[in-house]
Structure formats: structure tokens, C-alpha cells
Image 1 (cartoon, each protein chain N blue to C red):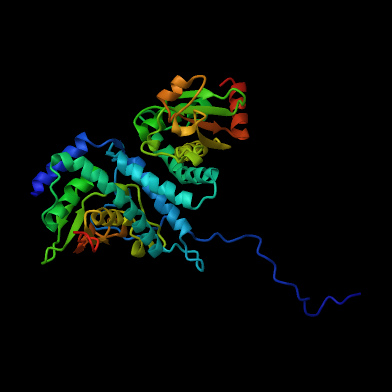
Image 2 (cartoon, rainbow over the protein chains, first blue to last red):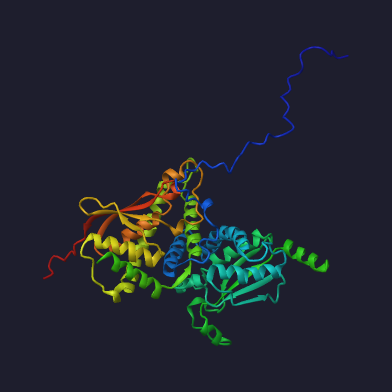
Amino acid sequence: MPSMVGPPPDVPPKEPPYTAILPAKPFHSRLHSPSSRKTIYDRNLNRTQTTPTSLPSFAYLFNTLITYHHSKSGSVSEIETRLNRAGYPIGIKLLDLLLYRQARAAVRPTRIIDLLQFVHTTLWRALFGRAADALEQGVSNKNEYMIFDNEPVVNTYLSVPKEMSQLNCAAFVAGILEGVCDAAGFGMEGVTAHWASASGGTGGAEGEGNKEEEMWPGKTIFLLRFGEVAMRREEAFKAGGG
Amino acid sequence: MASSKAARMGEEVWKTRTEKINLEVLTLTYGTLVSQLTHDLRDPATNIPDYAAINTELDRMGHSIGLRLIEDFLAKTSSAGPAPCNNFRETAEMIAKVGFKIFLNVTPRVENWDKEGRSFGLVFEEMPVSEFVELPDDGRAQEELWFLNLFCGVVKGALEMVQMQVKAEWVSDVLRGDDTTEMRVTLIRYIEDEMPPDDE
């Protein structure tokens, strides 16, 4: 019979069954603020809602952003991805700001159509002072929708070199869209920007429908691809008679 | 040029000859650029943003904007009398009341001249690009980062194209907890037109 007495065997101390929560206080600011209290917390969120600034200045800055990302990219699609990522965090924050600013109750869109209308009208007006030009559902894939802009403001004054004619710098705007849709809980597969005409933004279209293309050489299609979860939720809404 | 005349010119060019976009698009785009730099330019050893390098990069980006922006500035103001500035004080008025007005829709005050008239401060009551901005609370950004440093580069680049070599740097910024936002511009020298040796 083994003895019950004697020193206990060397066992490692047991892990406590819980992990202590770190007393994190992320909103306990250590920042200095001016004595005039001109911080972002003291300002009306709507203060600059309709303030104009110079479009050329935006163009200089956007050009700088593109040049920077170009210098870090090996391909056209990489530039577009990087521009998309640059716009994405803007979209995440814009959703709540724009909802807060609208006259009716600040309810997030939960149906795809509501979201698309919000993007097509509210978001476009806030950024570019007008609604987008058209909104369509994709023909082949049910989860694809397209928003058309005949003349994206961000592409004013931009010309893309011929060897990169596929590049559409409105990818930055596509990133903003993707941020807005993701923040609303639609888990996008992706939002991308494409030239409407085959020849890209350089003009010189040929063949069918070229009148339209001549009139709007910079016409851009924003392709919104919804994720599976969003599509299933939409089905559930429909099944529930919504 | 008298100060009030510069103000009128700035107002007129802004109202009639400048295409507009919503300020928030500019502000958010600038924010995303600086934020990208704080991700890309980090000290490899500590993985902390290298704010000195970010300041330099912003300044360099601004400089290349300034080199091109001056053309636009001269084209837009030429019909109002393309007279070159007679002295550095006029240059200061033009930068504040015309340059900043037409490119940012703000008019900083020209203040704090030194005795020789070679150095002045541009004091910004408002800085639209700082809207929605708070610097990271990491104990360093407020000491080291000049969020608006791109604009020093713009001023330097633009003046360089009209034969003035200047130093431009921020001396205070509300974002850093200062009570004012002030850029100090100092004339280093007028760049003489350098003639080729055999040119008669």
C-alpha cells in the first residue's frame, strides 16, 4: 500500500482557471489640448458638412497618394488594392457620420436595396455633391450590383499612362464603399472600380454604343459583390415576408 | 501690393475661378495619407512610427506639389495683374491672402515679423485639414509629428519656382496641444538667374 504521507510530488502549479482582465482604459486620454479647447470633441460634427474647398488641391493630394502607392506596388491590381485599402477606413467611419446627419432616424440599412440606395444617394451627395448616375443588378450573378458614375470627381485632372490603361484610381472610392457596406454588416466579397468602356479612361472607343462612351469617356462602374452571409440574410428577410 | 488688394484678389479667384469639392473629401484623403505613412515608416527595432521620417516624407511630398501648384497659381492670378512682388512683405501677403485662400479657403494672419523683414509667421485661426483629426495617444506623436508638414513643403516648392529659397516649418499646432497653429517662413536667399558662362 503506498504511503499517504510524505512530501507531495513535484507538480507544476496549476494554471488559474481564468485570465485576469487587464484594466485597460483606452479612452483615458493623455493628450495635451489647447487652452482654447479647440479639440475634435468640442466641435459640432456637422461643422464642415457643406464647406467647399478647392478641387485642384484635392487633385494634387490624390495624385500624391497615387504616386506613393504606385511606388510601392508591382502591378496595376496592386495599386488598386492599395487605393482600396486607403479608402476603406474612411468608409467605416462615414457610415455612422452620414446616418447621424440624415434628417430621419439614424437606422442602419439592413436590406441590400436600402444599403444600395444609401450609397448611391446619401454617400454620393455627401462626397461629391450629387447622386450617382445609375444603379443596376448584375445579370449573371445575383450577388453583384453595379453603381455607375459618368464622371467620377476624383478622376478629374488625372490621366493614366497608356501602358496602365486598366488602372482606375476610383478604386479609392470603391474602398470607401466597401468600408461603408462592411460597417453596415454586409461582409462584402469586394468592391472594385472599372472603366465602362473597353479602352479605359483614354477615350477612343469603337463599335457598338460608342456614343455613350464618347460622351462619358471616364464613365466608371463600381461593382459591389455581396458575401454569402449577406445573401442568406437577404433570403431570410424575403422568406419572412419582409 | 497692399494687403487689402491681395485679399480682394484671393476672394475673387476663389469665387470665380476655382472648381470646388467638399472639404471633407480633402480632409479624409489627407488623413488616410498620413495614417498610411505611420504604418509604413516605422522603426524596425521597436515597431513604433518614426515620426521624424514621416515629417520628412510629408515635406518631400508637399515640395513636389508646390513645384506644380505655382503654375496654377500664376495662371489664376495673372489677369488680376501679374506684377511680381516687390519685396518679401508682399510675398507674405500673397501667400496668406491669395495662395492659402484659393487652395484651402483659409486666410492665415501674417504676424511676428523679425527685425530684418526676412521671416514671418502664418497664424491659422482654422485649419480645415485638421478637422476630425486627433493624433495617436502614444506619448510621442504630439511631441514629434507635424501632421500638417506637407504644407511647409508646398510653400517651399512653390517659392523655389519663383526664385526664392525659403525655410518653412511649423512652430506650433493646435493638434499638439498648442494654443495656435503657426508656420514660420524664413527667406534664405533670392535665387539669381544663373546665366550660362558664354551667354551675352
